[in-house]
Image 1 (tube, rainbow, N blue to C red):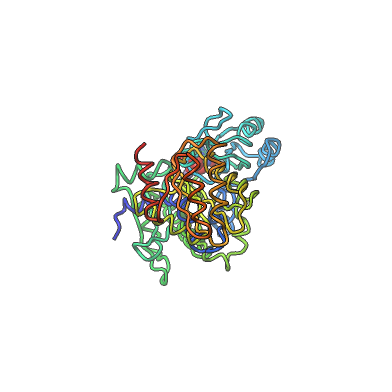
Image 2 (image 1 turned 90 degrees about the horizontal axis):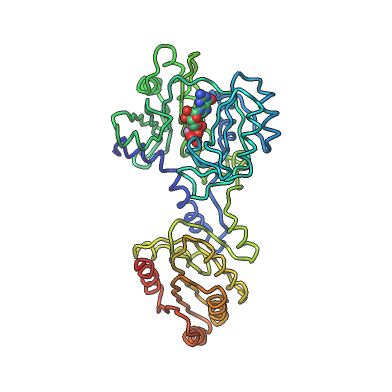
Length: 434
Ligand code: GDP
Ligand code: MN
């Protein structure tokens, strides 16, 4: 059995892993069609709508696309206090910072006018948090909700856990803050309930979790009821994770889900059409769209070796062999068939525009693609873009002899590789040297 620490860490880390895995899986599952594709992601307001439809208690809210809409929403809510929340897919918004200068992606105020002013400094600006890239993520929408007083913040997550072959509920009376910190410093404050997916959640399990979370008296039954409803939602919508942090209590004696992050099982798309139709693609990287303009297919990853390949099969093989040699791909750019020299140039431009990239690995098998065209494109790009990172090239197939002559006679510092293994080793070594 995994330790509670491991499970809790997993609850928090899933989000970040998800940034890598789905893309790789997308490459694997779409051989021959390297369309950039991410797992379904919902914003908080969308997740909360699903929750409220399933009897889970969330605050009243509206969604706004402009500061004016936010102001109107705040007036319409007619609440004692309002909480304004930037909608991005990453967590840690409360402690985030906008490139407008505004601090905090979550704000409480009693004045609707202030909601308008704050929204003005959120919408259209980037919000950077612990879980976003350094430059942050652009905010397109804000959630305007009725604020409630919180007397206690706990943590609750339901996740599909591989090591348990089923759902596990993870909770901590110490919520609101970074759960990984709690797991590291006070593992005894992380509780879990393993659910038998055939038997479903037992009353005793929901009650025990509610008690472990520190809910007392009538609040205990209420919390247990909310936990059961969250579990039913988890199953019904084919989620792999439902995370509520904080799962809080109010001085008036209500248990409320103040935040929500849901991840979904991509294989369930066929029976979750309504949910998948809500997919928020607004956070796709601009580079993906730019690549599409030149008929190139781009998939961004987290490493530092850019991969220029043709075909999804070769992309996967390249990825595996880079990992095997201790490196990490920064991205894939798939050239496809019928390539023109200008596309090769554009491809290099895109790859080098990514500051993560510390080396480029070209791995092209020329079947339909003529290697000489690739070689010409590469040498032109190297000269015009004044390439500053090491370039390792492995070409094979049609016209490869001529291609190698072009590269060799170019006088450019291009490292040739005899095969894929050799190419991966040289690319990894060139990065390690830095
Ligand atoms: P996150 O930082 O992205 O996880 O965003 P959250 O939705 O969890 O909000 C951050 C923090 O703001 C929470 O941990 C709460 O302490 C606080 N917060 C959010 N909503 C409310 C609210 O309605 N009332 C009060 N008093 N605090 C809130
Ligand atoms: Mn939160």
